[in-house]
Amino acid sequence: MPVALARQQAVERLLDLDARGELATGHVRLVADVVGVSLRTVWRRLAAGPCRGRTGTRQRECFTLTPQLHARLVLWRGNAAAVHRELLAEARTCGLGTTAP
Image (tube, rainbow, N blue to C red; front, side):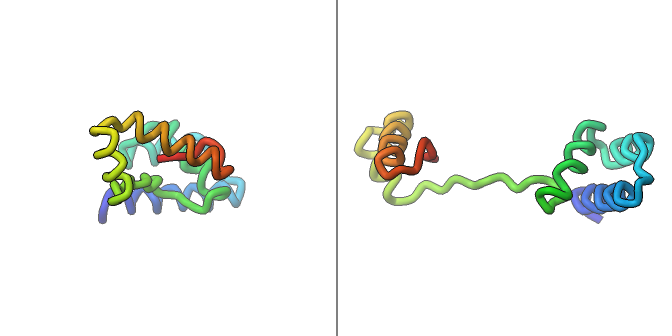
């Protein structure tokens, strides 16, 4: 069984114990020791499970360099900071706030 799956199943079982009011710190400590993570990590996963609908590890967002971004990098001679400033300015102009890759 993959380690990530074992961690996810362990957290799901802890959430079941919590729903029944039987969760104790000893349970969390045991799971942390068995799956090889810190006690704090297990508590964070327990806190994130019910409200975010996930019990496993968080998937990281992947950045992809599009042809449009590549063209901007070429125009700025590889200056990624300048491209980022340009994208931020466009986001502000379009009313998207300060969100840019």
